[in-house]
Image 1: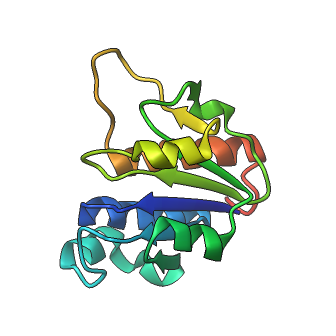
Image 2: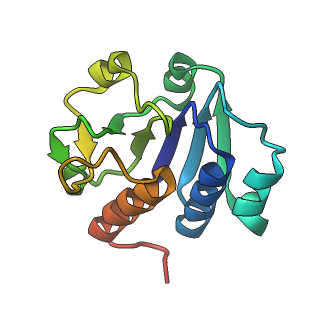
Length: 153
């Protein structure tokens, strides 16, 4: 199973779109507080449409609580500071994909904790990043494609 982990997400429509991706692929979604929105936010719900009941959602108060509760065996961080491409993420039984907040990315302290498992999506020079919900979709489908797309039609 793929686990999408959002560290302190800020923008409701991004989280809603990511929830839709998780529902469509069977990926679990972990949100690490503080959130930049309420789970009752209308923009969040609207972006997720009627997919929310299909999302395996967990909310964690801190990164340490997430690690203690979810107990990820392989935690792969996505960052523009990664030194390997997302296509090199190992396809394993429980793959946890960690994404940072939209405006600042993952803190250095967290990147150090998961090093050397820090990956990036290639893009043109001088571009800061791509939209978070797009990044999640790119990486989730990359891992799924290399893993055989089990259960997807």
